[in-house]
Length: 91
Image 1 (cartoon, rainbow, N blue to C red):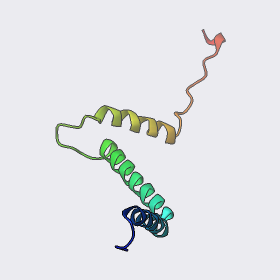
Image 2: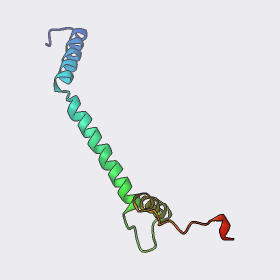
Image 3: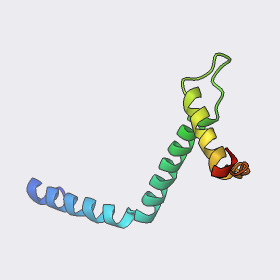
Image 4: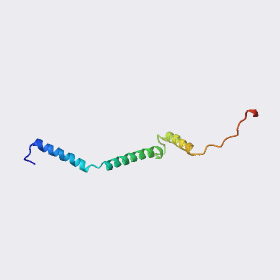
């Protein structure tokens, strides 16, 4: 290797680096790792905003929590029973 010109050495090293990178690349593993990392980040953010008790004074997200859980409760609860029907001849 030392008998080669610096230019030729660089070419061989570059070719080796490229081939080694292709051989040791793990695209499925990289993709899965990224998905897991973003999933954990999302979970931590949702947990911090909606469920985590920060201190006794409350959190900056209390109003958002109330609105969010009121919407969830409204979406998953039974509608109120219908009241008596108002007829026009009852006046």
